[in-house]
Length: 314
View 1 (cartoon, rainbow, N blue to C red):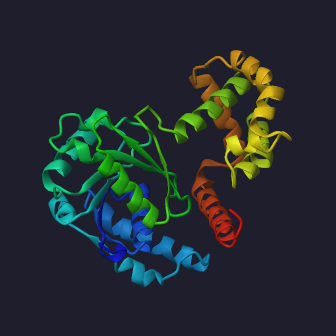
View 2: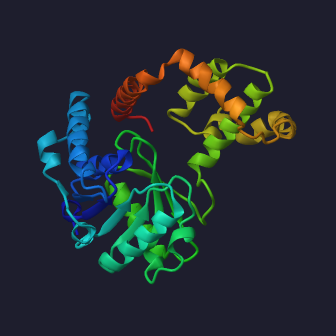
């Protein structure tokens, strides 16, 4: 099957579903878009059209927005949306009962060969697929947000996900220009949110203990960790931070980092701490300006993507 013949059903037309529709349309796939709230679908199509025009302005599209929109069709029923799908990408709410019910429908309605993938940010796939007759074709394919600007997709299997399902999903994502990162077995939060969670836990602890302020935490990441991590990961970072590579780094600084771990006990994100950090953020960014700042974020990510696309070095 060639790329342009691939058929993907995007179930859930919210922010992530819209992002997947854009991503798959750019890959030449045919997309069937469905949402349980039928009023949400035309709004989603308008949002997708607007985002495609923004991407075109940023010179990040290889085809005209109209051509890409023609690959996305909305459907009135879930059965119609998944009837001929090769891959189903579910984007429902982070609610276990809702996801279980939706996957039961998908397993009953989608063709037997179709992969059923969830965009969940942290649920183990076993928690909502265990009772399904077709559970072997189910897995998590969790994107970074927004999917069309950040190419990461995490692939997480359940204990019964087949190797074929993982391989097929990986290839579909590679062909769509994604950068898959796979887990060998399921774990809460996958890779992205476990790493992000570790950094956030320490940031909240240091602020809660009165060691620093929220804006200083963001300054450290914005002006040191972030620029490095925009083109290399933390392991490559430390590999390059010592003359003899990562072994040398660990020999020099391993004891320091081991000692720091004992100084980083978990801290509950209690209401007072959350309010303190929220107040600092609202001083910097009023709540009514968040949408505009999100648009600014996407423009910056688009500029970074355009820059990286023009680089010849790996």
